[in-house]
Image (cartoon, rainbow, N blue to C red; front, side, top):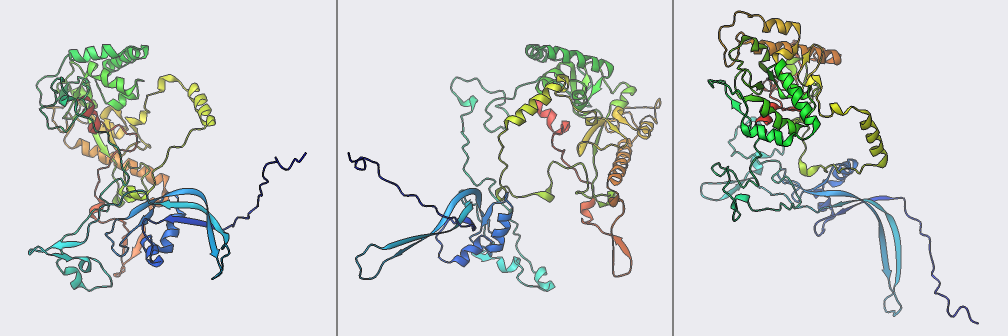
Amino acid sequence: MDVTANSPAVTCTTTVCLSETKLVCVEYPGFVKNVDKMLDSIGGEPGLSKTYADSSKRLELRYRPKDPYCHPVCGNRYSSNNLLLRVRRRRRKGSNEEPHVSMEILGVIETTYKFQGMADFQYLATHNEAAGSQVSLYDKIILHKPEKKEFFDHPVPLFLPPPIFSRLDSTVDYFYRPDVAHREGSLPSLLSNENLIGPNRARRPHNAIFVNFDDKSVPTEPLEAARLNWNKNSIHHSDVKAEEELTKLFEKRPVWSRNAIKANVDIHPEKLKLLLPYLAYYMLTGPWRSLWVRFGYDPRKYTEAKIYQVLDFRIRCGMKHGYGVNDMPVKAKRSAYHYSLPTTVNKAVPQPASLKEITQDGASSSGKLSSAKYMLKDSAYIFREGMLPPYRQMFYQLCDLDVEKIKNIIHKNDGKEEACDERDGWCLPRTADELRDIISSMIAQVVRSKRPALSTPKLKPVRAGRKVEESDEDEDDEDEEDYKASEGSENEMETEMLDYL
């Protein structure tokens, strides 16, 4: 019996040695006729090497590399496992033999840049003359060589284009839907009299009562809608417990900030939005602005309400205060010093959680007390000597400033209060400014103690033989700045009113 007749075909395998050369592939979005010009458009070899060294950067391609106002097209970085082959096909002239094909592996491509996004809008540096013609401004605004004073004194039309026009370079599906008020059979919207653009739904009313400082009286009970809303949503035992605790807090102290409440009562933030209008009203203006006041209590009539007034404090930053922006331990939420364009940095991709991490989180969370799930720390509303505020902007109540020197200033006119002022309340005039100066000096001492090098200003010699303090900022930039709150901040004045409109 012939076994080989029915046996499968024998396949040959070959082992190929890969080259150790690591390569980077750029899928260029265009026909390359001149390699040198192509490299210039992506920054040349130095620019490409610099981008490759930082894995978070995207490769920028400028079709007009000599134009500083050219907005780039950005290429995303991808990991790849490709091979670069050199294929040669040789055939003798005049021969009918099949050509000889040879292949050679030049290297392994581990990184590939792909330009998958859309190009940003381009704006040329031109100026429209009165006759309607366009004149180029490049020779007038771009400095090619050192120029004399006359070059800078020459009048030039204002040309200040933004660094980027479009935030995104990829298409986004918005899924537009018709407005509820425009559908057939729907009732007219309550917000139709306002100049709103296509709201999908009206805001959920929380039925809070707002009071201005000039109002003659204060409410003594909540709105019926607020009562019904809370009774409808307080279905758990924890909600009833939170209501009892907050009621006791208002009996003990008639005026509270939301951060102070969240540091003393454990309740979900959404439930707190429903509970507060049920127990208190909200002050919009005056010395108790952005605070919640117990129903029936009018702080304008009682001098003892002085300690419940609010102090809007913002951390001062600048070299004249002893430390710069980068030296401040309390970081701002946004900073222009570390801003990068959205189209030049890869967005962070959420990493999948491992089983080990889930187990550890579960074990750690099971050991914690559930009562402190939503509570804030005391530092969110109390200031003590030697501590730093958690946010750049804080709304302190005077009774929560636990510093003896500050208490003496607050109670300086006890028993001598004459009238409640909208700016200073029951305190002496300019008391808030004096308290801000004291807190700022205390914070500066804490910063210097943590960073001793900051207490000694750097000196540099000048021509006249004198020495002046070195400053990294202009004189105008050293003035006090208004900073946004840090990440996780509960900035009541900015956000809390919107929750109850």
